[in-house]
Amino acid sequence: MKPAIRTKMTKFGIGLALAMLACGGALAQDVSYNSMPGIDFSKYHTYKWVTIEGATYPNQILDTQIKSSIDSQLASKGLTKTDTDKADLYIGYQASIDQQKQWNAYGMGGGLRWGGGMATAQSSTINIGTLVLDMYDPSTKQLVWTGRATKTLDPSANQEKKQKNLDKAMQKLLKNYPPK
Image 1 (cartoon, rainbow, N blue to C red):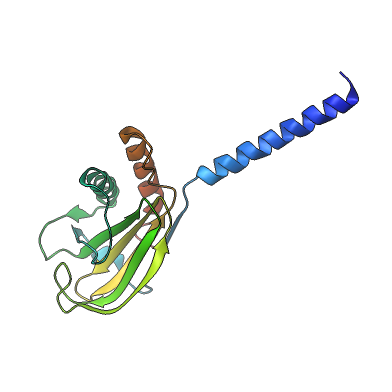
Image 2 (spheres, rainbow, N blue to C red; image 1 turned 60 degrees about the vertical axis):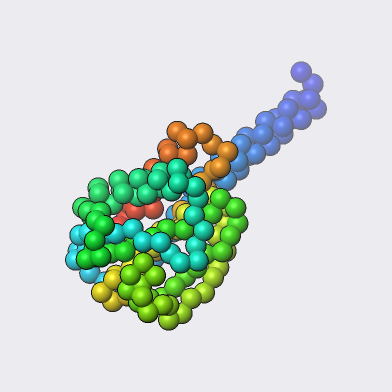
């Protein structure tokens, strides 16, 4: 083989390898989370699902898949799901299949809308395929933990692949819950 052809093939191979690495890295799920400083998370034993006002939700099938994946991870952390208002934590999520608004509300009242309304609310944008999980302390009416998993929801994936991606993302997202 001529040296010029060998050099071109080597450059092509290196370029192809770099492109594959870049694509593989682009598909990896990213997670981030934050918690309220000074909160004793050992006091939380039960949780209740709540709807975040102003948020848009996927269809019932995907909603069930998302909640099932989160329920599984929270159960592994020792939390028990309940339907009573006496839950230690209220948990809600927001998901983006398309780019949409995320509502961040603090200082809420009680109930599903938490009664007295929101003291402050601001919006930001959730990128495609992102799931945001929020945990509120109903006794203090404060957000105590929030997490975000990107590249999690793929509307074109089959049901099995969607569930696998969700389970993987929720495991990564809740890996360090409760915060140390």
